Image: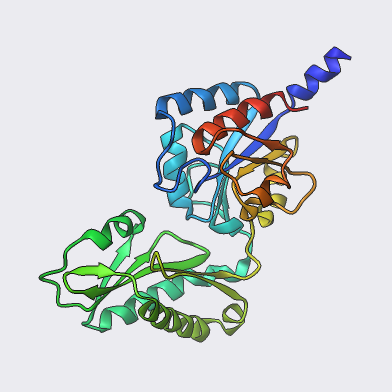
Length: 289
């Protein structure tokens, strides 16, 4: 009997870490030293755990965190719409084929924005600059609006919008909605079917708009993950119901700062928050049978 229990403990396990408010906190920081995290993850991998990251973010953003943490597991990006088997993101899998049109829409959206001299357009890896942008002075800028377009998404479209007020860039709900409407018009011109099946996340406080397929959710990743890891038990670590995989075969785990609704759906709950909670859960998952 002890031998059988030991076999259960040593069973191969695939662990999917959420990024925002799970591996990192609200300020995009780890709450333990990086070297301590890397050591803990390496120890977990030595106990038959394969560790990847699952997030709403782009594969490029997730890949950067995997490399930072020394991980080589799968990436579930853009709410399950794009998957790769590791940090090399060149040959990924789209889980909804219709979303392949989004890069074309993004190019036409940027081209349209560049025609308007009143708009400052920044096109690239804009996540970091978006956090700094509201504090940047714009004394010598002739533009009245700024649009920061994320060029790393493959199955969705996202951008930040700011309005120049006095000498600073500020978010503005009306301007954000107006730019979002323009993006939707371009999307509809390219694919009416996709346009009729999109969901739009608007966060006026942060000034961000994300347009993605309305069927997008992390559960879409499961068929591909099971094909890649047929002998692995799957664990998902997160902080909210957006991290729920809607499948009884997935064992859900919550960090300490997770909302209570998500915790009630989880089999394993950490007492610690954010990164420290992830480390705690890794130890518990290693012993889970």
